[in-house]
Image (cartoon, rainbow, N blue to C red):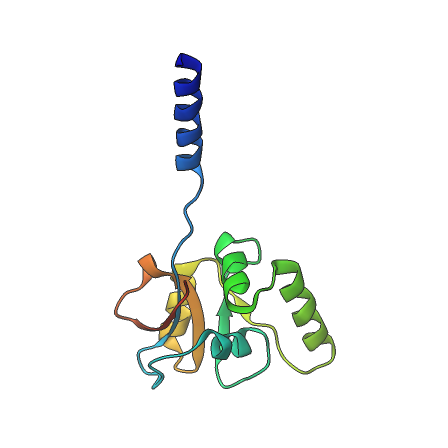
Length: 135
């Protein structure tokens, strides 16, 4: 019984140490007239299918980026990179600019009414407007 309790306790501690999934939100500048957006619409901007908005991306190696593309387009980082490589090579689109973290994405989006980005919901403040919350 003691071994079982120790094992359960160690399992619980290991689970607590895993990074929690952040709630990701899609943001635009307060100056942007958009108020709501569906996932399918947002994916158009981040996958180069529309240039109505200018996407601001998180670092390629970041967990939030992988989670964002999985949720919004059902694609992993390698698939997204391949897609953008093809678009850039053929001259059909310019890859989104990468920023160092959510704070930098938020700053860039706040400064540009045409920009769209995604950040951890905890980083939202009154400089930007949330138009989509990802489940």
